[in-house]
Image (cartoon, rainbow, N blue to C red; front, side, top):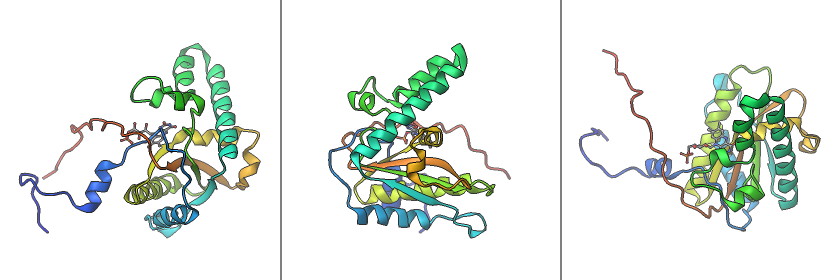
Length: 210
Ligand SMILES: Cc1cc2nc3c(=O)[nH]c(=O)nc-3n(C[C@H](O)[C@H](O)[C@H](O)COP(=O)(O)O)c2cc1C
């Protein structure tokens, strides 16, 4: 199908999913079927990867109490990092550690209760081998596949970079991540309970070269 930007055309189903995905930070108290989790992870596995190494490993939390415990530990570690980073970095780090950096509209009680995973029913840690120089790019692509597949199935997500701090928590061994792997990102998954506004995208970043 040939298209030009001048002709207003209906978005494809794929585009509709891409455009409707948001970072969602408030979730219904509704569990996600394991089969659905497996389905979105399968979409993650379909991502391209450098030299087809498929470096991703998934560590999934679905138990409320366990998620709460990890969230608390990660928030604690982030706070300590803030204190160590000195006065200039403190405000920024504390804001981030409390989740407030990422809130689109003011203080949210859900976020204060769980500033890392926002009460989501599923947390997925994505890891990859430390000795793979392309792993971060591959994980990014895998993560986007997961988030778009989730959206197409009626679920919402938020990538949580803060998940990386899990490596510094005392409960990290509960994930059974081997030392050869690094936690690259966490993704939270669940049935969203908010409809965040679209963040305006900057468009001064395009140059066609003759
Ligand atoms: C690598 C990465 C790390 C992120 N880490 C966090 C995080 O720790 N906490 C959070 O609330 N949002 C986090 N986000 C979500 C971004 O804040 C969000 O994607 C951005 O504001 C754009 O909003 P949108 O996804 O709704 O378009 C992260 C996003 C990315 C891509």
